[in-house]
Image (tube, rainbow over all chains, first blue to last red; front, side):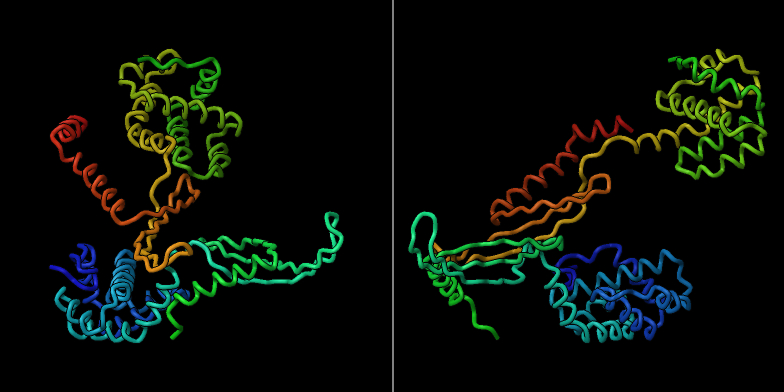
Length: 199
Length: 198
């Protein structure tokens, strides 16, 4: 059977197995657990002590606690990835055997943070490199060893490029003559005109 | 096949004679712990309890580690092991103890040795992105989809990344080739070999 939150594929076996573990925790504690897992997915530090306290009532072993965190991370991030709304997620989780209260609590937490999650995932998407900043300077060449009266402007650009793997910055210095710079600007304007207007 | 022990190794193992059966058992246990990557701190405590100097203990450990590792590596049979050890001139009790030590632990030693083999870079993660090129400086009004992949590999703890780019039809061809490779494992030829290897 296909599930939207799994990307229109079958639900993985391990997720199916862990849903029964989730049912052992009370629905109130499950909602708090979701809040912790969402914090982790959004890049804030996860409070493992709190999670242990929340799962202590259900008397889960340490392996089960880790499995619970893993299955909640999967459900929440996969639902955000495939842009599933919270009602569909709730009904699909109930089809998998999660009790109604648990599913409702989980989906409410998901709904609050859905757009933040999707923004985070968008930012984590593969990027090779990005332009960080451009600094410029215009010089005026008066004369040179080749020609006594040059009288030409010269544009110096310094492009700061951030590497995609987070590995730091590269600096690219470019010196452009006035004519070439006008051609460059014209090309950029034309490319800019093809972009959709900012919302 | 017989183990050939050099003069130096025979000298190392010679000190076992002085330790007796209990001491040799202790030394063997220590050598196995070191092979598993245990702490060398235990050496001084063991030297004191066995009443030998730390240097003598180290030499004994070297000797017994070599004996166990080489015999496990070559998978020598019981009789060959006994014959190899016989040349050291130990008492029967000591010989039996060494043989028992070898037989009990050779499977574990072999698994430790297997992890020392060199490895190729292995898969760590694959990030991908689907883009559509709409226009370029040379041509406007295009629709050209392509997939950018970043393959993360890890080799002995170092991580490298390889960036690849392909159009969808090449990607489909790649997927079909990989599925065919997986399908090979189910062919009769591979199944026969896998059965015989077990």
